[in-house]
Amino acid sequence: MTALSDQCNLLRDWLGIGEEVYPDSVVTSWIRMAEEILSKDLRCKDMVQIDTGLLVDQRCLLPSDWRAMDFVRLVDGRPLRYIPRDDFYNPAFEYTDDQKNCYTLAGNYLIVGGINVTSGTSVEITYYQDIPPLGDEPSWLSTKYPTLFTIRTLHIASMYSIEDQRNALWKEQADELVASVNSEHALSKASGSRLTRRHLGSRRGFG
Image (tube, rainbow, N blue to C red; front, side):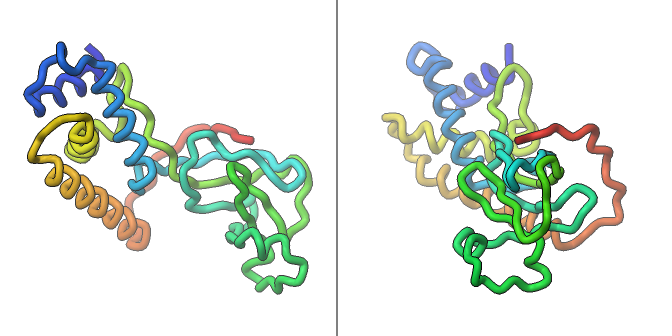
């Protein structure tokens, strides 16, 4: 048994419907939709990744799993401040001292400006990644947030021609759980900690 098949069985148990009615292929589609929605709505520490890439013509392609930016800096340099694209490309825009090192976003590209950078300059980003799809092994979502994962997937299932009076409750509970996790993460970012950070290991590269 895989973690994915275990989750499919769990969801069918909740619904009281057998595999002959809703096979793994259908239940897996509910799981993928739940992962997609949670990738958009959820912001927690387990989604945070750190990656580095090389600038070419002051830009680089972001990682394929990036969802939202958290922090950007030049490797061994100052942090970069976000500037809206219209201001970034406006020659009349008056930069403050903090904005002289800046970046903007265009689709899946990070663009750096306001400083002298050359091709090959390394930039480091801290970003929120998409939730990894559940497969043979458990994901951090299924391990650390099993209630949220299950309830959100049941809400998705309730839209699949399933007449279940719990569908409104599932949506409400899932929304409340997302808000709670996001709030906890926002507070933890501002509160600081005396704990020693774990070793992050070698960084991957993007771009």
